[in-house]
Amino acid sequence: MTANGSGSRSVSTSESGRAESSTEVRREPALDGPDASEPIIESRDLDVYYGDDQALRGISMAIPEQQVTALIGPSGCGKSTFLRSINRMNDLIDVARVEGELFFRGKNVYDENVDPVALRRKIGMVFQKPNPFPKSIYDNVAYGLRVQGKDDGDLDEQVHTALERAALLDEVEDQLDSSGLDLSGGQQQRLCIARAIATDPEVILMDEPASALDPVATSKIEDLVEELAEEYTVVIVTHNMQQAARISDKTAVFLTGGELVEFDDTDKIFENPEHDRVEDYITGKFG
Ligand SMILES: Nc1ncnc2c1ncn2[C@@H]1O[C@H](COP(=O)(O)OP(=O)(O)OP(=O)(O)O)[C@@H](O)[C@H]1O
Ligand SMILES: [Mg+2]
Image (cartoon, rainbow, N blue to C red; front, side):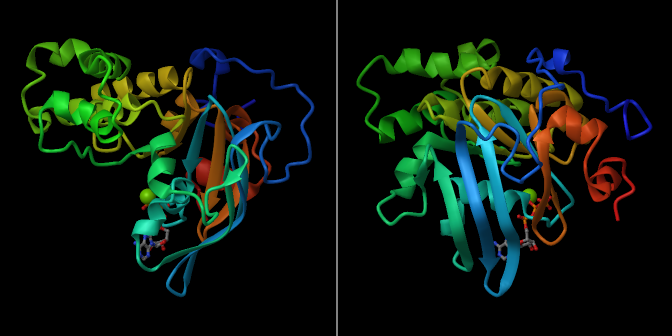
């Protein structure tokens, strides 16, 4: 049944514990995605430019709530750009310009009255390189809570809960006062995830969160992503096909030129994609 010939990337939905029927009647593969009923994020005809260069072309995509959506595609195809357009991180790049619409719970985040800082509280982000603050483990996690004035309750409890959810608590419980920078790379990344979820966002954007980590740390992050999707919506960029196949429910394939070529259930993308270009990319034939 696998179209890639190797069989090694075939996706078992039961593996992720979130089995879905693959026999459901599918709508025409318009690029608004398979679960367009109640998307938490929806882009419509989104174009992003850096100066005169267009990085994304007419991206229309509906991202379902409480699932893991993977963004894959070759280097430079605009995955990070798309991710940053969701919580307006592109605002921080002088030459970046966004056209089109990007809805979060039905509200266009590019409307004039949207406060990007408030938006980023709802839509948190974890980057490729772990970037803890040069502060204690405790203060890293407490940071956002303090900034938002949410530290009047039991701050200790909130910090512990976030570390626990990020699957880090057991490893750092006795050293909460030591610097976040003294942790291993994989621990630092989980600290950044704890920091991102401490303030209780609704969406977590992850840009290649495990690409700098060893296989053990990578597998911890992957497990964590699957767990997080029980409560949050996760959008994750990865270059690792097996990782996308293992942890995501939906996969969006971007190709060179900043085009979204196909977006569908992950097993469909990996087993029987509609587009030859997608199959070529997934099977490594890339052209
Ligand atoms: N800050 C920037 N200023 C100017 N151009 C940029 C900037 N960031 C990205 N670009 C350009 O936009 C295009 C898309 O880049 P982007 O980083 O989104 O790709 P990507 O798919 O995330 O690639 P990779 O897999 O290498 O991370 C590229 O041509 C890139 O050179
Ligand atoms: Mg990138």
